[in-house]
Image (cartoon, rainbow, N blue to C red):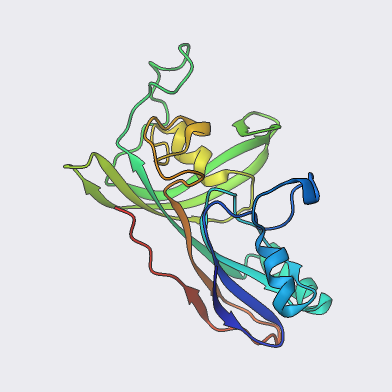
Length: 223
């Protein structure tokens, strides 16, 4: 785990894939490494602002005092922070869909396309689903590269909402499961406890007197 930025208000780290952002409900009986617990050894109390999935690496921010956490929660709720992710997926396929929909390509995406995906997402016990009673979800997407030799696509994604597994579900339901993401249909292996999805950048439109940089980013190339 690498510290990317720190001030009196926040600490920002590069979370490795295979680490929890905060402790799970199993607490000390869960043997997995936890970013929040690791940071406490250096900074004392830390206060989570957002989370990354266990299998996802990238930019993760914690507040260092309750007032900063409160302000940052408002920044997140008001969409005054832009979150950018990069993902590598398979080219379009439907073998992971249930048989009754595998022949339907209603959400087929032109691989040269970009825009905003809008959905209603329902959070299940282990994974999320699309459903009429779900919460509104919006995701900006852009296809950056088609590696024909490897049979993969590189995407840039910016979630405008914060639904559980939002990016993983949106890609999978359109036939592009993230490499290594078996929960959402990938048939390709990655390193243990990792998938090819990374939170690569945070950009702050407003800071409300917090000591924050304009941008925090990592370099990420897993092709």
